[in-house]
Image (cartoon, rainbow, N blue to C red):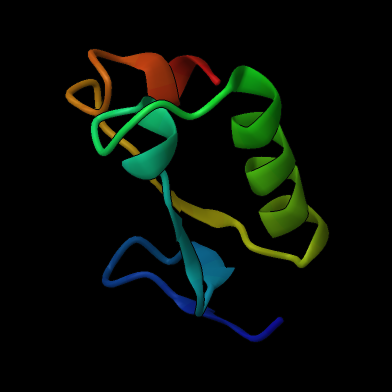
Length: 64
């Protein structure tokens, strides 16, 4: 996985990010097991940039 510097933060993050909106369940039911499997697959692939927000499933994606 290639990394790059995130803006002016100086932090190195993966060029590919994981969008956590779907695991929040906003777009339909996603089981906890499926959500964890998707997130773990992203981490295993070297993804370090995760887009999440408290509004994604009323905080569900952040809790996962």
